[in-house]
Image (cartoon, rainbow, N blue to C red; front, side, top):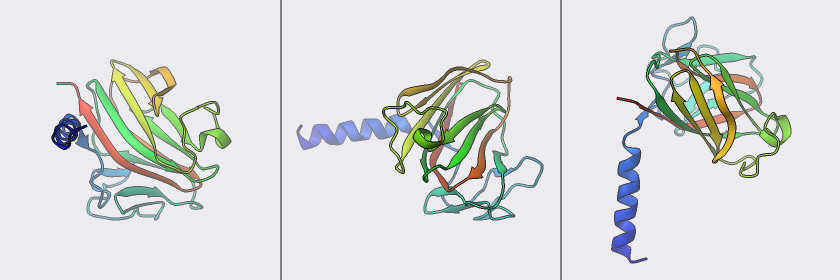
Length: 177
């Protein structure tokens, strides 16, 4: 492919991704909080150090108990949520979409989606959640995790800290007009 054509392709791909709004700024936990607490705006770690923001990631630190980190905002409109995660061996976490939890784990070891062919162990994987009305279609690297996850009409986006180290990055959303 000629260099000029490749440059235009890369520019077009970048422009298409610009429709997404970051939910994580890559520096600190601004816009995130525990369900019943104050926002962690400007802070690089949660009050109990269960979550830290570093190197463009939200890191779930192991060994500090179960905790849920939630966006301050709620999302009543249809949307597409994209994020990347990397799970340590046997790590267990979750992604909350308006309230229900989608398991995000080291799938081949911790399940429940043990038969995924495109999952990359201890590497970056992408989850895409497309919400229409009160239903979400959820994929990991293009493979279906949940075809029709039932949701309430509105709610925030959350991350669960359970077992092992998890890393999340490029957490972004595109809301319907």
